[in-house]
Length: 266
Image 1 (cartoon, rainbow, N blue to C red):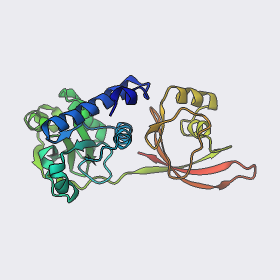
Image 2 (image 1 turned 60 degrees about the vertical axis):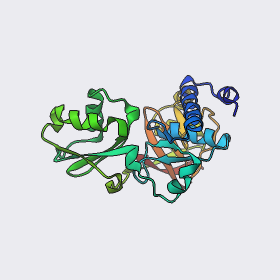
Image 3 (image 1 turned 45 degrees about the vertical axis):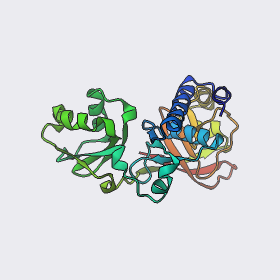
Image 4 (image 1 turned 90 degrees about the vertical axis):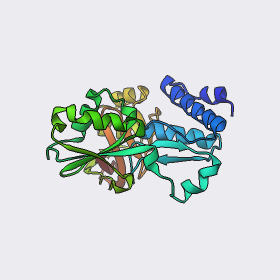
């Protein structure tokens, strides 16, 4: 594995940094023969590292987020001695992550309120996985290392002053049902700049600027080509504008323009 050659393929310093950290984890695994884990990754970061691991043909890893269809995940690098335990789902994930449950909360509380509160406590975003808000409680997947701190400090926040805070088995987390807003767009072609212009509600020239700013991702991989053709089931992420699934190419208008059904994450 030639790290320098691999890193040279990436222009972004952020990408180089996160890949370098991954290589450090692999080296630590090889030296200690002990499990190594990353921080929680965004979908884009997770896809990037997954791609790198496949490129170097490293197979002793698992992507894990605590619940089905998790958005933010860690990557677990494991030694061969526990591979069977991992593959047979016998590994105790409570040893590396925790599910913090906040009971008796305000029914109007939202995801952003929870995240904002955690930020006020000085917790880094990468230590926090998915935040799942239910009718009368919240589940937060976090790195094991910050669990005690949360238990000791969450009640200091006014919003959680009288809440019942506990640690529950991660297996009890039921995940969340993703909500979507259905929208239809009409485009002259399925080129990415056309799609971005409609989704971002802007002009094609502005869409090109957004692409050049490396703010657009197709299936969590950065894409800057205006002419990239978008297809059904592609996930299009536009930083600052949202995330969308190209759900269906419905048909054409009389003038030959494409009618595209899109699901926007909400």
